[in-house]
Image (cartoon, rainbow, N blue to C red; front, top):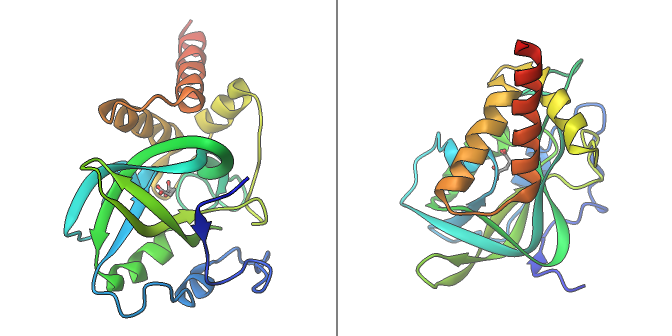
Length: 210
Ligand code: SIN
C-alpha cells in the first residue's frame, strides 16, 4: 500500500518516552516547512470543531488512505493518566478518504498546537484536497500505534461505555464524541465508525434513564 504521507523525523529514529508520553520535543524537531510563512494543517478530531488558535483561512478538506478511529487514549484532555479517555487518531487504510477541516496557519502556531496534541500525536506531512479543488501538502497530527497511550480497536459498544465514563480537564469524553459527530454531519461526512459509537452512547443514556 502506498501511503501518500512523508515525515522528516522517523518514529524509529526518535523513540517515544513512554514514561511521559510527551511528543512536544519530537514535533519541534520537525522541520519540513522551515522557511514557509504559511502552512496548511488538517484537523480530523477536535481540531474540526475547536479552533483555539489564529488562522488565515479555514476550509473543509480531505486526505486519502487514512480512517478516523477512537483508538487513542487521552490522559490530558478527556481523561486523566489514571483513567484515560478515548479520542480519535488516524489509521492507515488504502483508498480511504477522511473528511475534516483545513486551516492555513503561520508556523508560530505550532507552539500552541504541539502542546495541545502532546499526548502521543506526531506531525506528519500529507497531501490535502481542499473543497475548492486545490491539492497541497500540509501537516496532520497522528497518534500511531507505537505511542504509549494507544488503546487500539474495541467493539463500538465498549468504546461508547468507556467514553460515557471518562472526563478530563477539557471536559467530558461524551462531549468530544458528540461535538465531533455533529461537526462531521455539518461537513456532510459519512463516518460509520463515529456514528456507530454515537448511537451506542445514546442507547446507553436511554438505558440509564429507564
Ligand atoms: C485532530 O483533531 O486533528 C487531532 C485529534 C484531536 O485533537 O482530537
